[in-house]
Length: 123
Image (cartoon, rainbow, N blue to C red; front, side, top):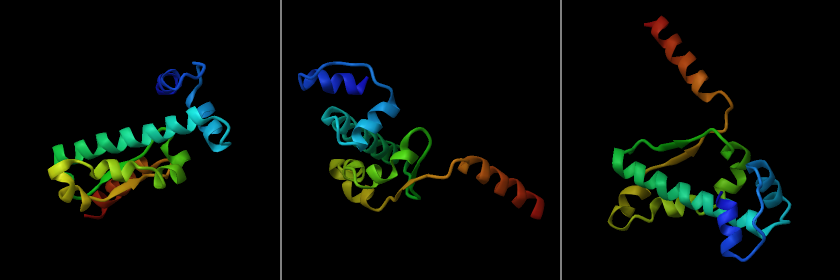
């Protein structure tokens, strides 16, 4: 949907693409709308994550995983995600000190659960 909105705003043909097709077009540098879509997605995600960090007081960090992000780890690292995470007016100084992490392991939640269960056995 974001791809179609950006295409329309840019006066480009509006076509239906799935996330894999958009990321392939971005990686190939063959579609400026795809690149702008990925950039915009990362920026929106950063804004929402920053709002969430302020709302819940996430001083220990924000962990982001799942979906397509692990496949886009290089794009994520070089995106404006962190800048948009921090750009919160009077909360910017607070947010600068909150780390953000991208979870890239496929089964991180299950590994964490396994470790937790094992820790219960040890106590």
